[in-house]
Amino acid sequence: MMQPVVSTGWKKWVALVCMTVSSAYALAADPAGSVSFVIGDASVVGEDGKARAVARGENINAGQLLETGATGHIHLRMVDGAFVSIRPQSRLRIEDYRYDAGNPENNRIKFVLEKGVARSITGRAGEASRQNYRLNTPLAAIGIRGTDFVVQANADITRVTVQSGAVVMTPLAADCLASSLGPCKSAASRVLTAAMRDAYLELRNRNEAPLLVPAEKALESSPNTVAPPRPEEPRATADKQAKPANNVDTRDAVREVAAADIKNRVETPTATPVPEVTPPAPEPTPPITSIPPPVEPPPVVVEPARFWWGRYSPYVQAGQEHTSFNAVNQPGREPFFGNAVFSLFRESGTLVVPNSGVAKFKLVESEAIVMTGNQLAAAQITSPSLTIDFAQRRFDTSLTVNSDGIAPVSIASSGEVTHQGLLLGKTNTPDTKLNGLLSDGGGQAAYVFERALSGNQSIQGVTRWTR
Image (cartoon, rainbow, N blue to C red; front, side):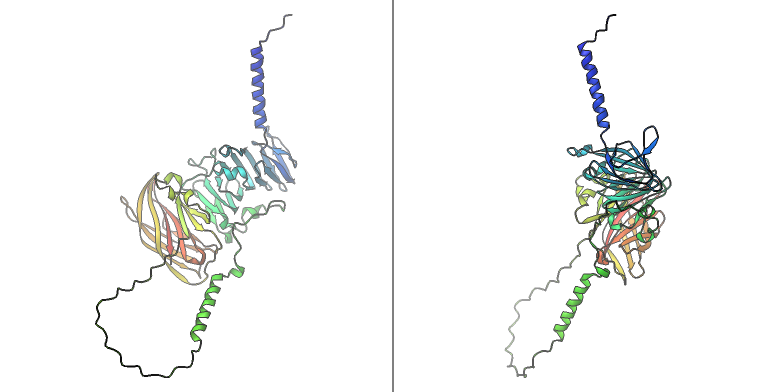
């Protein structure tokens, strides 16, 4: 029987196809990381939906789902040095994980926490390409700024606490798709930093913005309390130095020493008085030929700013790049609260909040806009007022926003002053949100605010105050 004749060209084409398929398979099989620790009920779920026990040292690929039972813990060491912990009763899918050291723009990191508690410590890929990192939950998208954070999630709630760095949490919606990468930027986006390490952001509804739960109210429901870490997890690294012992402000001691020194000098006895001598008769006073110039008063010393704000990129005008988030995000500053347009930064360092006295502040800087869709119109602030009762840990503030085409809009808020120097608006004018900060020593304050108007209009603003 005659054998079919296969041309040399056909053989080469078949070989090329086989090599291409083989290379693609090898690329797809490149591990995203490996299991560095496992204990208890822990498994990996295959594409067929069947679960099998996971073992230490096993490679984990993008696309795989990891699951833990009531006693299970899985620790992963990713190819870029990142760390991931999957705590009990959790399901985490590694949707994508690509690390290209030579071309950071090719890095891709995407996790989906379907339920439970997970911790993520950013590696080299995330540090180099934060815009390509995302962790999704059933409700929210979480982006990073070089971070160690812990997330708790289920179908009804998402909570995140930050141990180092900062995260951005945004409800999944039309302007924040689950299919996207990086942090979302919308009116509902909220920033949490390690300066609020014992607090957490909480989201219960996609139609609302995440709420900040302060440390004193977060002890029983924090992700780290719901599912504590194993001793094998890396220790969290604090971003700030420890406060002085007993919360003593060392500057107070310096002031007391200086005051005592002045008092001693004033009360030091003088030498034996010299007997009085009758002075000679004064010579006639020469006529005045000129008037000396008036003495200029000393210049008013303005305290340097302890707060700054930057605009998110969609709202930065050409030639005003110095007002952008990235331009303002400099060493020694930390982002805290924000609204749809502005992100507020505070000076880094140890913070001491006064615990007595009532202070009235004056407005020294502000920016307000009327937002119609994505169109911005400048506005002015009048009748500003801010009073802080440090003993009662309360604040009251009010102002009026004025802009062409709309009636004057009142903004008012009363709320809590936390021991971390946060101003949390509790009782506000309708459709208003307001949160802010104190500087070290309570000499300055700042806050961001927003108020929804009719239709698609809103007011977005930010302020800085001094005593």
